[in-house]
Structure formats: C-alpha cells, structure tokens
Image (tube, rainbow, N blue to C red; front, side):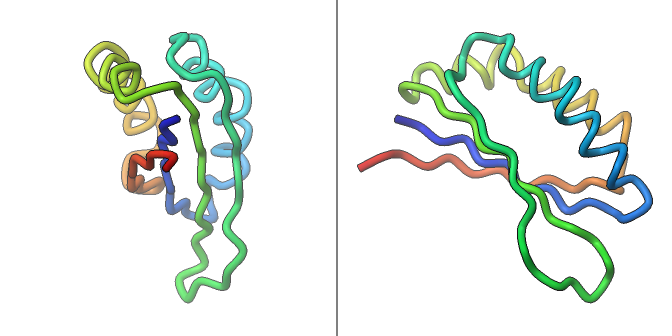
Length: 100
C-alpha cells in the first residue's frame, strides 16, 4: 500500500475556511479521481511560534502505479486550485510512504 501524505502549514486568517474547503471541496475532488480508496485529515498538535497550524491529509492507494497515474492525470490541476485559493497562506510539503 502507498500513503500519499500532504502536510500543509496554514495561516490563522484562513484556517476555518481552509478546513471547510478541504472537507467539502478539495478532499472529495481528490477521492473522485478513483485513485485512492481512503483518506484521513489531521491537525498536528504543536505550538508554533508564528501562529500557524499544520494540517495533514493522508490518501491511501494500492500501489505506486496508481500513485503515478494520479500525478500524471490529476495532481497539477488539483494543486493549482489550492494555490489559487490560498497562495502563500497554505504551504504544502508532500511525501510518499510505502507499507513494508
């Protein structure tokens, strides 16, 4: 199994909008691609000096081939929507993990 993990540093002035948009729009759009069979949405528990909050969205797919299909067919457009909406107020860091 492959875990696609996106950690996003979110400015406090957009935080509530970000949560609502992720739950009602972005995550459903990612899941509608058919690539992922499950997801989780987390808030990291920590104190930041700059007042930002980190969120983590985890998507689960069966194999690397499926993940590469997501990257080639869907990722750019979905990332662009987030970038357009939040610009530098939501900075993402992405990782891929494989079950061993």
